[in-house]
Image 1 (spheres, one colour):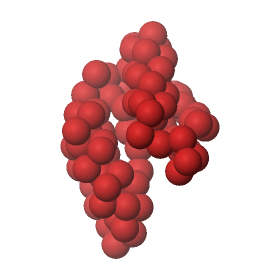
Image 2 (tube, helix red, strand yellow):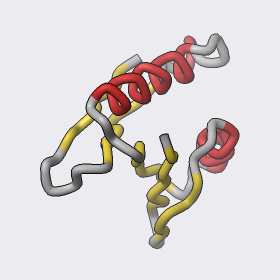
Image 3 (cartoon, helix red, strand yellow):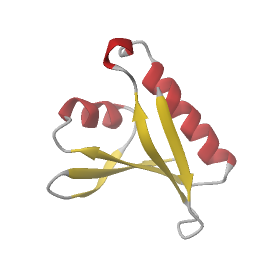
Image 4 (cartoon, rainbow, N blue to C red):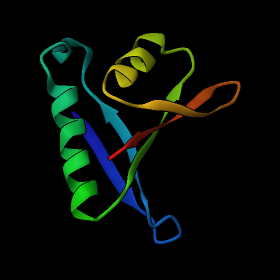
Length: 87
């Protein structure tokens, strides 16, 4: 899996998750949740209150997965959902 957590001084309460992905052949083994859990740990260590990410609106299964993990839809446009998780 690949993931990046961006911290931006202009948004002191938010950690941005970028590029979280797991190869299709490796899915359903808990790797994505493990990566996301590490993002949460890093965000909390940096005293962030929210984790934010964007999802393509066509990835219904991914949106449902993030919702099961506690994310809510914050903003939406034609192609992307911005989702937040309160830490």
